[in-house]
Amino acid sequence: MNGIPYKIAYDNLKTAVKKVLKGCNREEQEQFIALRTHYLYDSTFCRPARGNEKGGVENAAKQVVKKFFVPYPDFDSFEELNEYLHNECVKLLEKNGKWEAEKAALRPLPATRFNGARYKEVKVNSYAMIQLENNRYSVPTKYVGERVTLKVSASEVEIISDNTVIAKHKRIIGRNQDSLNLDHYLELLLRKSRAIANTKVYRPQQLPQIYEEYRRQLLARNPKGNRNFVKILMLHREYPSNQITEALEIAMSYNIYGYDGVLNIIGQFMTANPKVIPLNKEKIQDIPQVKVNSPDIEKFRVLMGGKN
Image 1 (cartoon, rainbow, N blue to C red):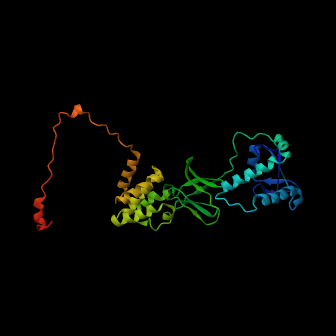
Image 2: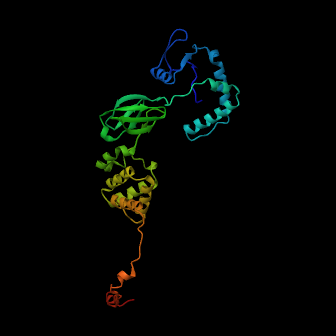
């Protein structure tokens, strides 16, 4: 709405209310107090089980459901859904004559947005993972046993060590699930490369098909094929994914199997085609002409028993 009202009425949601006191008094959550302090507005709370105090809001919500969700919209992400809802709300506001008066009463927003994330300190377990609520998120293996700070928002989890973000994950919506980043375990897999096919951090279905095909062909030709493959995966830290995928396709077509060969192909992608400049005739006029005679292959017919 691009503005701040002087007061907002709330139901007794747990996000805002820690404890319901007598009358309209409430013990508010610390994060909710921080939100109000940032935007400088007052809060008031409806009495429990008094739906009439917020009847207008409830009726409006029912109308929104009918307008925006019948028929049920189909979106690929919450971002698309939120954009759709925002645009539809703006259309409704533009048709409401009271909206102009409402906007005039709003105070301007501050220069910076409120940081709604919460912070928590945790310890990295022996599997290079941290636990948040009932889910687990990976970090680079070198942080095993260390204490790190989580920055938790509604959609993202950032893991911080020494003021540096060491891992980012989409926040899991669910319980008892893992969010694993293969790159976090590559140093460990380099030492224990035989385990790559059986570890759950390597998921071939999440990579282009060429990766697993190349790994199998590489392993069939080289006992240390898995180690070479892990080094190829590490190239993602320096080069775009599409270049590595293309390099693997070219390598397979020319029967080139190994880390050095793939790296060489990628290096050719990064090198511009050399410009060929013809030699000046004056500079080569003193160079003698060399004539190479074709070899006589008749003597090899003896080895073939005289057959053509």
